[in-house]
Image 1 (cartoon, protein in one colour):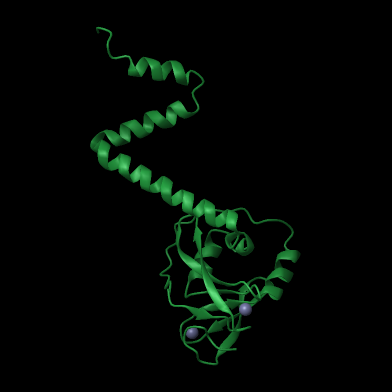
Image 2 (spheres, helix red, strand yellow):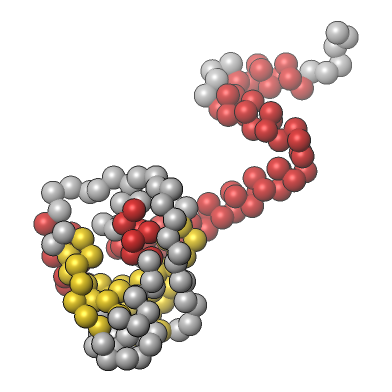
Length: 180
Ligand SMILES: [Zn+2]
Ligand SMILES: [Zn+2]
């Protein structure tokens, strides 16, 4: 099997997680995860591993070049991971294998998303990642427009979110006609 990046015929067996074997390229350190092995590993997991926050920084090398599946020769397509991770994994729609560039697997694993590879390549997950992008852009715009009032406004909004008297409070806040 050849590395989809380096094209060198040298992918070596490696352990990606307890009981999960993958292949690693000695040149670029990318890893290949075959669908059959991954599915077998997933089945043996007693339950879903809950997602966790992680501050661990990985210097990920998210290569954007088109890649060919090392296993079956089809095109690998990029799928964004989201959830605080800015890179994409490369997925083969034909054989279901996944290519992770250097350190991507470790970054995914640090957040316990490594049992979610099938979810990540689903339309549902991809839509949610795009929605999160839009939300972040809107928030960024508010931050810019509101300037130094933003932090206070964000705090009040957060408080109002779960406040049962929300509509009355909003009416009170917008009622600026009344004399002091
Ligand atoms: Zn390589
Ligand atoms: Zn394939």
